Length: 186
Image 1: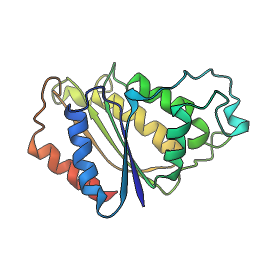
Image 2: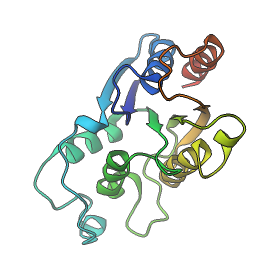
Image 3: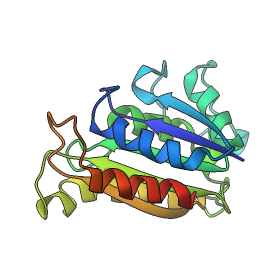
Image 4: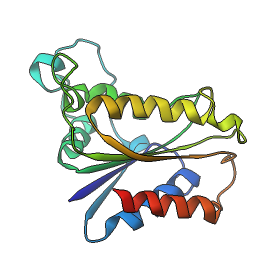
């Protein structure tokens, strides 16, 4: 069994990465874990040409979107972490998903290609609780990533929204305990 962690935070030691590492450490337990920093990927933007639908792969020249797409296919569990930008996931994470539609969905959009796999989602945001749960904040980022993963057939085992993350590098133990528990569910 293998786990793929997609870290969409531009801060390698920020709260999002700290929470993802806690999930990763609990999920390992003899399994292979691969970490991808989405912001460091070299990806061309989606052209919206729709050629990937019948062809099963993006027609653009080979880049990191293709390589990570193959890793998504191989992984049995997916862990995604993203800061909240305008109530949504980061642009690079959205681009990665846009470029990998055929990895996630079949031609008619009704054929989930990742059925039976598990996923977990982490969102960090600057809002305080309960505002952090709103769709204009962390709740929106969770909803956006959940939409992609659920469409692909993933069973989402849990989510974490960490509010007030800006400038806070010491993630509370209560959040880290939730992350460990989530990692054990994968």
